[in-house]
Image 1 (cartoon, rainbow, N blue to C red):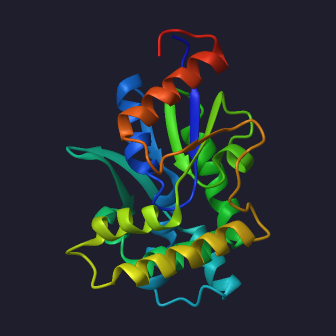
Image 2 (cartoon, one colour; image 1 turned 60 degrees about the vertical axis):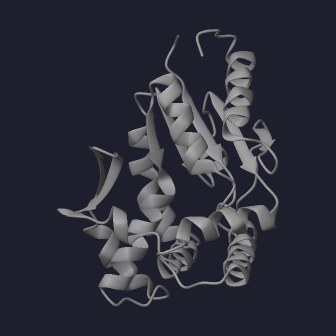
Image 3 (cartoon, one colour; image 1 turned 90 degrees about the vertical axis):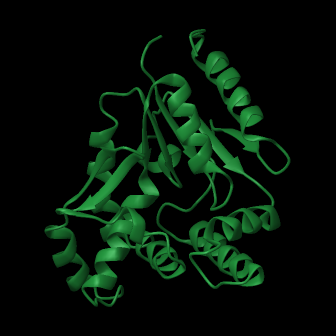
Length: 226
């Protein structure tokens, strides 16, 4: 089968990470979590004590930023320079800061070339929020994965159990705020690409979502090896 560039966009808690990793494994493709890049920027903003509204400070940070993915025993790991930050970028504080940073044109532009470089060889599944609309408008296959807010909040709450003291109601409120931030921003708002296949995962097991995606890939590309 000809290598494809596949993108999966959607809001937090829709199941993008699990679905993207599983689809990539089924196709023997690389998996790239682009949201981790924005979390990496947020991590560095926090570590350096920067005000995210300080454009000159952000410019200096981005000028010497060294984010890269390396394959580890448990999948792709994100490094900032020589430090593995994978286990430190999933806190609620980093999540909200990453959402704020991703609205900055200077941040999005800095990461745009990095993301496009990662997709040049194809045979890759990208997970994000503006993959199909901005980063890869010519991607071979585009999906938009969504789900009911309460279901998404419950999923995220279960993921954070033992790592955060947030109550379910707080997780839902944060998620609702992030949805509003991501969808309402002027730069690269969260929305389906016009040619994306939208899948609602609210009541669907992961295997059903994957099967639906594989069917979509075959129909869109006319390739039957997926």
